[in-house]
Length: 396
Image (cartoon, rainbow, N blue to C red):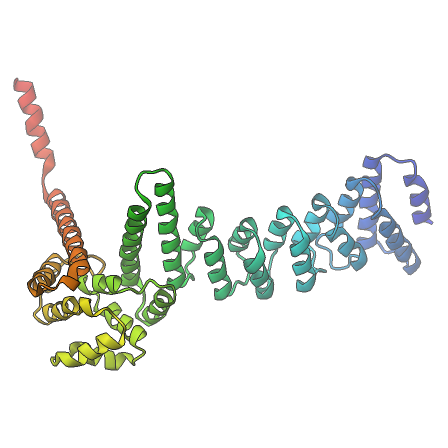
């Protein structure tokens, strides 16, 4: 009877009045002790209201039923497919939408609807994978910001591949404690590419010069990252660098000249396909012939072999003893020794290698000078000196 009166009344009510009455009817459906006949009549009325021309009315239903487990499923599914401002509460919270429903709604919804779905509580791993695979940047960022989302590592990798060049997504990913080192390195590479494009587009540097500077910065950052990588993750990082084409002879030589022997060993194991213990044995064996064979099997350029050979000899001679700065920066004594040995070869095929080593020597000298000056400043008593200057000014 109540529902009949409601249906007669709404024919002449304004949109605002209809919305208020619809909200009351929906709450009564959920919370009042209605008979089965009244429940059926109320459900029928609400299905009819799905065709109400005013979004205020349909939005009233959406707000009441958004979090309700006992809401009529047919009404919820219809509201989820309604215009975005009506559908948002349902898309954000309704427990009656399963993953299949949400994937379909995500595919057909606009950006605002997709963000709402990505922000749902207790978002499942399959749904997160679908969002990471096809979702726009806004939805992927909402997914990353959703602390309740169950996101698999491969989904994070996919977001890195698709949107790692965007600063909001990159900043969110870098702040994640569970981000694998390989993904962190991908973000470094994307940042370097973005900066190179930015500099080149503004004609601050030529495109080739900008790309080289970006690549060099990426290599340095990768070594710094590797220095912080747990030992058990180094192999995975090397696999990532190889598959992405970044595990070059130049990067490996930079690592060796920085004293990062672990990365050097893991890199050769990855490139040669040999077990790590055998690679380690060849590197540290006094008989250099084993390392020469390993070097060839790793596919490294023959012209670069003298530099690696001399660097290993320098390690055995203790050149790095007493060096500061960890294993993320080039060591000047090591670089200069390798450069002198390679210059003595007088091999025209080593021109590119010598140019690289000279750049390394400049970089190592500048870094050593910075550290020296930083130490001087840290240990200097500047306050008395400033006071003496002020005294002199007063006398003058």
